[in-house]
Amino acid sequence: MLCPCNSKKTLDSCCKPYLEGSKLPEVPEQLMRSRYTAFTQINITYIEKTMQGKAKLGFDFDKTKAWASSLIWIGLEVIDVPEPQSTVGFVEFRARFIEDGRLFEMQERSEFLLENQHWFYVDGEQTPMKHKPLKIERNSPCPCHSGKKFKRCHGIQS
Image (cartoon, rainbow, N blue to C red):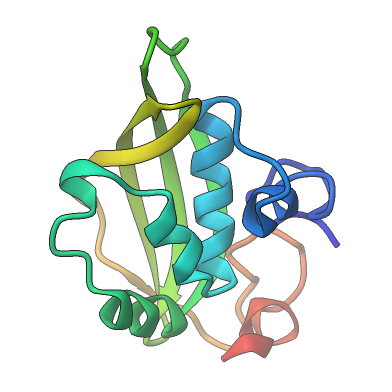
């Protein structure tokens, strides 16, 4: 099974070791990808465990779980990964998901902090969506670009 983070690697050789705790992300991009994968698997415990500072203030486990569970995750695109500076790193990404039958795209520049050899998500600045969400019909091509109809691809999850 390919990893949901769109790395083109298998889940076992990509994000799974981070999610299981057998390995720590060595760079911010690995943490960001593993957090995306955790959202797709509704692993909110991992999401909470990998946050510090501003991001963790007011974090609502149940609300986050309900939100993540209501989505069909379509894909992740990494846009920019500047070299981390000592204990601070950034990753800009775009995530696509379907909510209530509509395709959404969010873009964020995430900030990560290295503490005691652990990277943590500490903040993120989202770019406002530049388009209105599109209605996805069952017979439409799947927005993940698999070449399948939506009903035979990501629509199976709905």
